[in-house]
Each structure stands twice: as structure tokens, then as C-alpha cells.
Amino acid sequence: MCSAQPQSFQIKGAINMKELSFTEPYVNEPVCWKGDNLSLQRSRFVLPQELEEALKKVLQDEQFAADGPVSDFADVVHNQLDWESGFCIVDGLEKFCVDLDEYVRVTECLGEMLGTLVQQNLAGDKIVLVRDDGHTTENPNNRGHKSSDGLGFHNDRCDIIGLACYAQSDIGGESTLVSAKYVHDIIGAARPDLLAQLYGVFPNHRRGEEREGEDPWCSLPVFASVNGEFVCRFVKRFIIDSQTLPDAPRLTAKQIEALDFMEQVIEDPDNHFRFKLREGQVLILNNHVLLHGRSHFKDKADKKRTLVRVWLANKQSRPLPEAFIPLYRNVSAGAVRGGI
Image (cartoon, rainbow, N blue to C red; front, side, top):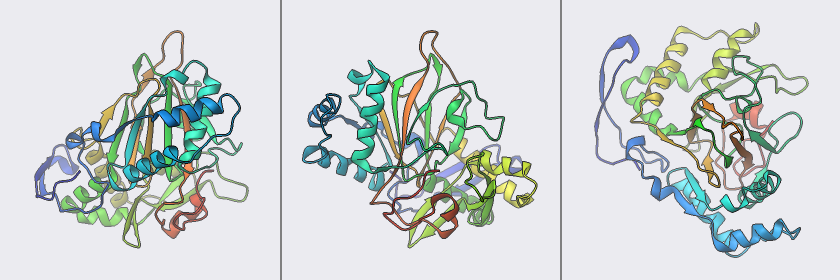
């Protein structure tokens, strides 16, 4: 977690190639941490025996029992997402990695334990496989989860993301996380003029997932505060790709400078956290306060890197700004919202 004591930081290679010195402000947002100070051990949990037994019964066509100790574990995870690091890694699903269909069903049950699954594409799929299907993100209408490309830090369109590792890559495929509030405060201390820009709206490309009657772009702020609760939405690639659409607003030089500076802060290896999921591990994260990314990967000769992804709405979620309505449709706290 962030220290209450001021610390001095320097950013090298920043705008105008200057070296900026500033003081870290005191922050009270719970999910605020500096990457090289983060203890992974505090964010790792082992699948409880009761939950494992409940999942085995599901595979025997019995109903998923999400009460008692299972419900207690869900409360622990929610507390971690809202009041601790904003994410957790759950160990213990490796015994379900024998069959992909069974692993998908187990992941679905974990999602139902934590919230309501929302659809992730226009086809209505509420579970998708994150693996290389030969797509490339160079095409603005392609989705990154279908490629092997490295993905810059970004948010998805939900309250909670679950990524369950069924098979890992041979090379690459590391996951990366960064605290959006920590990035926010660094920008505010070093360049308050750019922070002000990031509270304004930016055009975002919809990647061909707009519904009938919707524009292929929408305007969203990068940072917002609703009833004192912090929210972030940052997908730089979507913002830049919006400029290929003739009707999307043009980015100003100041907006581009703000985006570039934010990216430099995020990419500082001291500020973010990098790790590689093992088969049978599940990453669960709060999508509104953390940004996540992925390095380029190369599959094994006999098995594709495969993560099973769920997007969840959460009844304990924070309110969102009205500017998020084009993406979430309902921005009230605790609403079933998000998805595509």
C-alpha cells in the first residue's frame, strides 16, 4: 500500500526529455500502491476446500452451492478488490485443467460467486477464451484477446475481471498491473495541467462492437470522481484509433501530451507490477481502479496459451460518471451494468 510519508521520485525521459522531481502526495484511496513496494503474498489466496468440493459437484451436474464457506470466501475476495490491493490471485484450480470445457464451467461458477456475468461481444458470449486466433491489433476492429500481441495497460467494460489460466505460453505472456490512483497522483504532483486534461473527455474507438444506431466512437474521461470515489478508464489504443474515424473529435496537442505522459508514468517498471500466471491460477481484479496489460507471447508447439475470461457486474460496485453511460448504460452503484 502507499506510504503516508512523502517520498521523492524522478521520471526519466519524460516530456521534453527533462528529469522531473516531485513529492508523492498523501493518498487515502485504499487501492493505491507502487509496483516495487507491492507484496504479492498479501494478494494470493488458496482455493478453500469447501469451494473445491462445490465445484466438483457442479461437474457432476449438481447445483453450485454458493453459501456458507463459499460465500465467506467471496466476501474475502470482494474486500481485497475494494479495500486492499484491488486484485487477488487464487491458486488451486490446476486439478480442473484436464478438460477445457470443465475448466470453463468452473470459471463460470467462480464468476457467479462474485457477481453477475455480462456479455463480452455482440454475439452475447459471457465467457470468452483469451488466446491467439491469428488476429492482430493493428486492425482497429480487432479485439486484443484474440491475438498474441502485447497489450498496453487498459481497462475492460465491467466492474470485475476474472482471468483463469488453463494453459500458459512458452515465451512471454506476462501479466502486468498498475494502480490507477497511484498513477493519477504522480501526474497530479508533476503536471497538474495534464491531470486536468485527463479529467476531460477523449474519443474512444468502439472496435466494431457498437450496437445498432450507435456511433463507432464514444467520448469518455480517463479519470473521474463520483461521490468521492475514484474511477479510471484508459485504453490509449482505442483513443488513438478513434482518429481513423472521420466524425470523431480531433485530439488536441495538450490531450496527446497528457496521454503520452500518463503512459510514461505507467510504463516505469518501478510503478507497475509484472508476473506470469501459472496453469490453475485465477487473476481477479477491480476494473475501475487498476489497469492491466500483457506482454507479447509465443505459444507452445502442442498447446495454445488459453485464459478463460469473465466480465462481472458487482452489487458492491462504486458509482460511475454519467459520461460512462455509452459503455455501461447504467452507472448507478451496485447495478447490473457493463459488457457489450
